[in-house]
Image 1 (cartoon, rainbow, N blue to C red):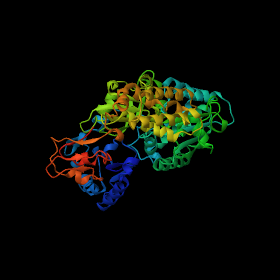
Image 2: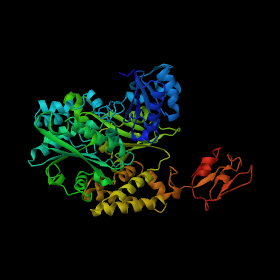
Image 3: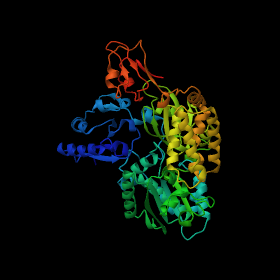
Image 4: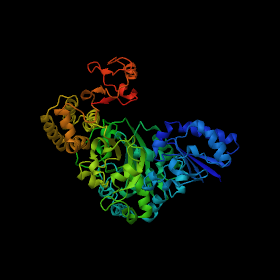
Length: 596
């Protein structure tokens, strides 16, 4: 038994900020101080508050250290772990009460509004040790299912819970399982979509890095419910930490008899293998994903038949994403009524969001469905930094839409987001302020979908390219009002005629910005002006004479010599030479350089 447990985030974000070196230094310093028999260092998954990483939490005090560096480790060991004095300067500000007392993390603004189900073990256990997962009721749900429930009872429970797929479409999980179970076959499959291709999204990656066994357990439950004996996890190769921990978890589960033959002496056989994806966004679509697992080019198939009837290798298949699976063990153990008591009537449970963009607390959050956008942005997210104002939020990534400031009190669930022209998607939530150009945002997401289209169907392959050409024309100052009407018409054509979800949702960012920010499009076209000052072709830098002190700092830093003026005299920018890099505005100490 250790007197102190030191939890260090080992997620991708903190690892990129030297958390591995912190762990190594901790072990060295603890051994040097003779504390290796008293202090236990645990590498965990993501804590969620990525803006303050690397993160370290010391128990039993619950001291939450943020932005820790390897050089801070000796002080933490000598002061806190040896002498019992908390290092106050490193504490997350909201946890500070006095020198040796801290608030519970759950009492802080970032965590108090959250409810963790899918993320329940992330930042809590060592994901590479199966015993720690088992200690927190791990595999108890699988044991209950195999020893106390029939496959139909499992399906009935999932139907009663109302769990909807967290991958974006929101299709009822129990219904998908019911369809697959009803189809007889000599082989069935339970698959996991861990491809997660949305820009800025890292929810599934974090679950796999912090709690991989929850997904393995849930997949085995799905296999039992539909009669499958083989599972596949399709994960992108760009997630090396998640892949490594999945491999470790699968090996441990096999060693413990929790995967493989005759699990829990029930006669049920189920095993899981990993398949690496090459990063194709289209492989997030279920039929394209299955085609890729089969070793073929990742392109979608025509539906019907649906995967529940004819999926992987032509056999009945269920495919759920990581977050969906992560909810299932808790539903089995706590019941459908418990799950339905969280969230809204039509969208029970919680949703994990990757919160990014112009927001103070970037990171991973899990909130009950129905939580308003305002609560997520202003309370959990800490608001927009730098004195700027909230302008919009993009949900659903390239498949979603923009939510304007006037709709900030919208409850976040599947139906409400669709009603206002957006969608849940897998859970990316990008916050924008008044410096963001909404035309440019639409162009950014469309550039992504044009690049990621598999090219199989003409509406997507050609239609999105034509859309992007019009947007480029508008942002370069050459657009016309007729282009706006053409663009809208083309959007609906692409949505109605594309083969798969990628093409069907690709126009959403364009349609939602046209709906709520049409005035910005009009300004680009009729005034040749970008109201946000983000489109370079429509932006000019000028120096305001009443503010310029003639310090020459702007001229000395201009990379192309576009600024002239004598010392202590008003300077002038030659717009024919200016490359609009913004260095002059950045260097000016008097606010004399402005964008127009």
